[in-house]
Image (cartoon, rainbow, N blue to C red):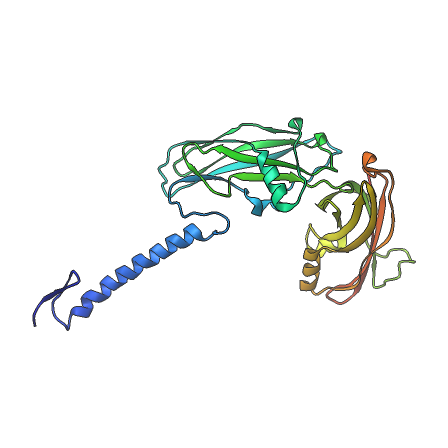
Length: 333
């Protein structure tokens, strides 16, 4: 047999040629596979962050409009306590031998205008006395630790719960590292809603019957303080204890209304979609959907409608199945 050189590879003879080709093909395929994995990792969050740049860059954890809901702050204005939020800067780098990087953050109120324009909202800047960034510089130590933190304080008693606020905290200087196109700003926000805030809740439960003219034959509690969160500027999430027992702590009933220059009307209630899905998956049947069987609006926006009341009735079959009837009263404080 005649030895030959083909495409840079020595072939001893035809019989042994596969012995040389197979290992080399394996190497080629392995290299291609690793490249594919590398590109997949880089672009696995495409649509959120463009990692096509292979240079080091810095981001803020929980930033971007995709994390807007997670960045919502529920304000409890009856307490002067400070809400403390942790802002984390991350260095995205393949090099574990990086030295320290100092990232500078600040409030970028131009992001409020951009967000309002894009989403048809009316968020207002935080009052200057309603927040504090404890340290505008975040040091990322380097080496194996690729993140650093600072704290943002929100003084909730300085906020009006009827106004929607936004506090866009942005990277203003990456410390010599590149910035991501869409993970530079955390959109801390407060959804203003005239009915959100502090309530007392009364809860009554009947087992095996939907007749509420008889005394409750199961759990009862009264005057339990609850903080009711806004969903939008014209809807709030009423917590419901029986639903929370089986669906989770965020289960509840949506109360929607119309706000015409401070005059509230057109009240309606419905199961929160996530709660409805949780009930269905748990084998529950809603016999009578939530009904607003009584309400009274007291005061106005200036008094935060304190004294207003809402009464909700609902009947379900649990997975047994057995009838469970609940009534919730909510009294605005």
